[in-house]
Length: 234
Image 1 (cartoon, helix red, strand yellow):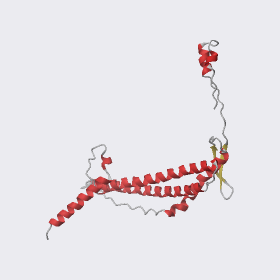
Image 2 (cartoon, one colour):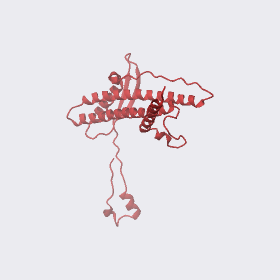
Image 3 (cartoon, rainbow, N blue to C red):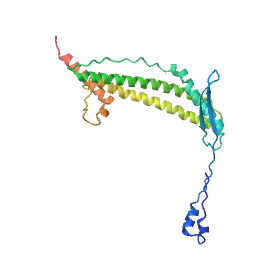
Image 4 (cartoon, rainbow, N blue to C red):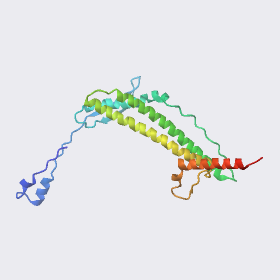
């Protein structure tokens, strides 16, 4: 995109104020049309199953068609080959749900247990997601290592693959951290809201469900049991 601005000093005295301002701000646009790449997927029988057109990004100093071709193939490989790295990480155990029966004498118990099941399901999904993202980060690391040449082309491909790898790794790490938060909420719901002392009427009560407060509740429970066991005599 090229800009052309009229020299203000040269125009003084020869143009009206309106024309002067207009010529000062006159802009001529020269849009450079970038090449396009068409990605076609064909099955073994020769039948085309899908296609997509890519608008190449302007990368000064690089062959954009070659670059986007290699980069796109690498992303396709990361999606197709990440399952090869799933065995590198522990398998997620089967989801186990607790049974909840509605009791008229204690209707809140069923609500708490339903919440427990929902949290278990979310935790299970997060574990599956973290495992898949860790495996994807590993295949992206492998692809990154395949471009160790000294050229600017290899450096740019390696950098983009590195950013893709770290994005997957950070997402998996976030999912693992989210599981920690859900464990605290799981303990709270399982014990019916009586284990960790919070006031649900407060707007920010969920933020008070932390690991430190859960540890405090566990310590109080252990100390209470020790005190009563020592004081009890058969």
